Length: 339
Length: 173
Image (cartoon, rainbow over all chains, first blue to last red; front, side, top):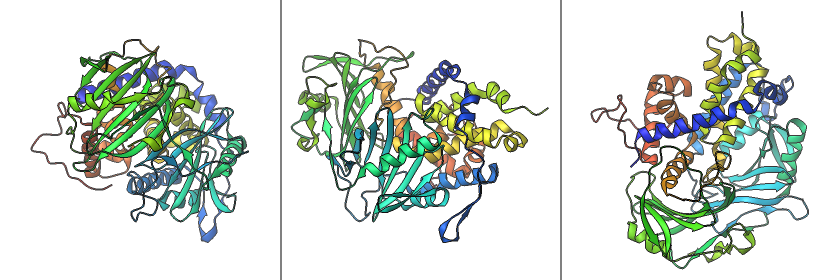
C-alpha cells in the first residue's frame, strides 16, 4: 500500500515537471491575449441578472459553482433518468453528424457519463452528456444564449469556452474547447465550440472498440466502462469490469510504455503467457514489446481490499487476445464482443 | 509601490504553475488552468492588487477554477499523455505501473478531494487553512481528505494531525 511519502514524492515529481515548463511561455502576454474585453451588464430571462463587476462577485460565483458540482456531479449518476436506466457501455449514445467535418476521437462510456472528443483539423472539442441539472442552471446563470439546432444552449465565456444545452429530458450535453486553447480564443473559440455542438447527433450512436478481447469476464465482474484514448504518445484501450459485492473493479488497459520517473521501485518479475511481466499487489503489468504494455489493475473505491489474487489476475490476463497492431484502430474489436 | 501585473506574474509564475500541476496532475491541464486564471487576474488586476494578499487570492482562484471546470476528463484520460516528460523506455519495469496506478487513482478523484489532498500533502497547509481556501468547513475538509486517501489507498504514516484517537468526521460537502 502506498504511503503519504509516495504521495508527496508524486507531487514533487509533478512540481519538478512544472519547473521545466514554466519558462516555455510568456504567461503575462498569454493572459493579456486570452483576457475578455470589458463586460457590460447582461439581462437574463426569468428576471435573472448577471453582473460581472469585480473580483468579489466572480469569486463568489466560482465558490458557488464549485459547491454545486461537489454536491451534484462528483459521482456516477446511475443513468440519465436516475430511475434505474443506465448509460450504455458498448457504444456512445451520440455521434458526429455526417458531413459536419467533425469526427469522434477519444471516447469513454460506462459508469461515469458518456464522453468523447470531437476532432476537426487541429480543433478538439470535448463532448460530455450528463443528467444533472446543476450544470445547466450554472450555464444559464452565467452564459450567453445560443441556438443549438432546435434547442436553447448557453455559451460560457471565452475562458471556459463551453456550451451547455439540454436535448432531452435529463440529457444535457456539454461541449468544451480542449485544444488548442492558447491560439483559438474569443470569437474563433465560440465558433469552434458551437460548430461542434451543432454537429452533435443524439440520434446516432458510435461503436466503442477495444484493442483486445477476452472470452469471459473476471469472476463476478460486470462490464462497466470502456474507453479509447491516447496516452504516452500512442493509442490506448481500457475496459473495466466491476464486482458489486463487495464493490471492486478490475481494469485492463493497453497502452504505450510510460516514461519512468526517479524513485520508482520494481515489482516481482513473473511470466504471463510467455511474456515478461511484473506483479504488484492489485496490479499486473505485462510487456507486449514494441513499447506497449498490458496493465491489469484491481481496486476498490472504499475498502482498499483486493478481490482478485495474483493467480486470478494472471489467469485472466492469459486469456486476453490482443490486436496485432494497437496503433491501427481499424483492427480493433467491437466492444459488443466483450463479456 | 503596487506591483504591476507583469511583475507579479514574473515573480510568481513558477509557484503558480507548480500549484496548478499538483492540482491537476497533468501538464497540459495545469498550463490551461493557469492560463485561464491569469487571464481573469489580468482583467481584474486593480482589484487583485488591492487585496490583502494578492497571491493568496490568485491561489484561491486557481483552486476554485480547478474545482469548477476540471471534472470532465474522468474517463477519457485514464493515464495522461506524458510523452513530453521523457523518452519512453524499452524496459517496462512495472515500476511505472505502481506510479501509474497511484497517478491514475489521483486523477480519478473528485476535484474537491484532489484539491484538499494537494493542499495538505504538497502545500502542507493545516485543515483550517485548507478550509479557508476551499470555502468550506474544517470537518468537510477532513472528510474530503479522508475519503480521498482511502480511494488512493494511502496509508497514513506521517500525518501528525491524525492519530488513531482522532476520529474523522464524515460529512457530505
